[in-house]
Length: 231
Image (cartoon, rainbow, N blue to C red; front, side):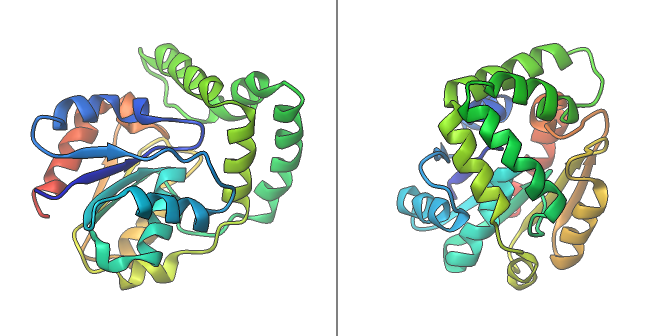
């Protein structure tokens, strides 16, 4: 049975995949790796590879998907399957890089909660009955990780390489999935990734924004299970 490595988004931990862990833990080896020790994608990927089994599948959401692509670039022979959720294969734009500088300064000055509340979390979710609870969970994860992790992850995202060529070379089982209302990593980014990996399954989750694992957990888990069956 191929182990599945789950890579969460920025300022998130394994709780981002809580419903999927509950659904899959009885049938498949699962693991997560902290993404908080380094400030480059290259170093973070090396950390993942040091912890991971000899061969594994990966599912990464947002920053986790970006990190998964770097892991694939560094060790393609070790990756048996790839699921990219609400993420982006391109390098960061200059406009987003510019916004990171004041966010980093605010986090270091003790204002991380405001940054997460006002500048980041409102962009994440579709409207739904569980939006408040999900936002509370996101805030709890962020505050548990703290400002130093925010800074390191911000720098890693800011300086990341373009990974389109990495995806072009991957021929294994793949899933590209996004929330229909994701404004951070919109649909066209996922259409691009699907085109780069024409063998991939493509899933758009209705009623979800940037965090479909929590917003529409059953639909997301079903899509992941269908992909896992192809490994």
